[in-house]
Picture (cartoon, rainbow, N blue to C red):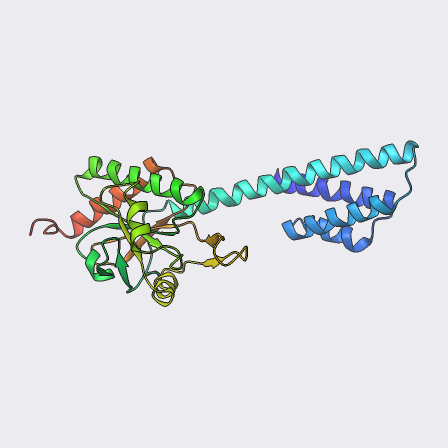
Length: 273
C-alpha cells in the first residue's frame, strides 16, 4: 500500500512537471520521496508559479488539478511515513530490555536546590528519573515535569518503591539555586533540582548525550533548545532506558515498574538493608 501510494505520487508529479515545464531536477528530487526532496520540489513549484503567465485555459485548469493531486498525494505519503517512523521509535523506546551496556550516563558534579554539592553518587541505591531542561521553558518542560511527577506517584502505587525525580538545568546563566528551588517545588515534593557552572552542566549533558543550545534572541531574553528525553537510572547509577515525549505517565509508570520488579528479582536483598 505504501509503495503503491508513493509510486502514484511520483507518476502524478512527473505528469505535472511535464505539463508545466518544471525543471527535471525538481521532478527527480520529488520522485525520491524524502522530506528534503519534497521541500525542494515545493520550492520549484512556487518559483515557477510566480514567473508563469496567468492564463485561463483548459491546460491551466488541468495543470492545477494535477498539481493539487500531486501535493495531496505527497502530503499523505509523507505523513504516513512520519507516523510509521514515530511508531517504530515508540516501540523501540517502550522496550523494557536493553541489550548490552548503553554508552549513556556517567558522573556529574553539580549543586542541588538547597545549595549543597550533589553528584551522581548521591543517587546510588535508588531508582531515579533524570530530565534536562530550564526553568524559563514556556511549555514543554512544565508538561514533561508534570508527567514525570505523575509517573513517579503511579510507580510508587504499583511497586511500593519511591523513584527520585531529578531536574537538571541546562541554563546555568539564569537558573541559580533559588530559581531552581522555586521551580521544582511546583511539580513534586521529592523532586531534586540541580544546577552549576556552564562547564559542569555541559559535562553532565555530554554524559547523557543531551543536546542544548541557546537561541540568539538577546543576552538575557532567550530560549534554550534541548533534547526532550527522560532517563531511568538504576540503583547502581547506570542507565536503564529512556522515555520520549510520546510516552504518557501511565506508560512510563508501567515500564518503570517492570524494571523495578526485574531488579528486585535479580537483587533480592535490595531495599532490605
